[in-house]
Length: 190
Image (cartoon, rainbow, N blue to C red; front, side):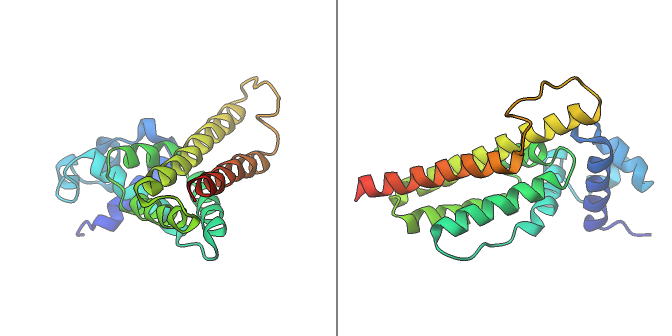
């Protein structure tokens, strides 16, 4: 049976969901696919490229939000968060792939957010920075949220506080602060 790139990515995504990013290794993936580790390097030069492909797989459902600039930022960020939450350690993996420049899908999300910031009136020279700030918020918030869910699932004694109450409402509040900040910044520049 011939090994296809999509099969490698699907198997890696399944291992991620089952064991988490810490236990997603090329050797474990090779065992899962019943191939030698060298066979994986035919498709991916290194683990970073593989993780970038898994990040792109995780981000497939994000798509493109419609509407005015505010609706596009909120919509893209909500869909990004949902995609990250749908996989064990999704935020950590996508964040690492984004930092290493290995995720094409994350570059597309960033471009959409940058275009929305430009439409909001942010100077083109700062639109990418505005978009990255929003992305960093989503990644950080979701990584924290996933960590708390893992601690809870492990039965750890997590202190109940505002941080554990209604994460969706907290996420929306923080995102709205950023959107309002973009609007205020744009008015200040005008």
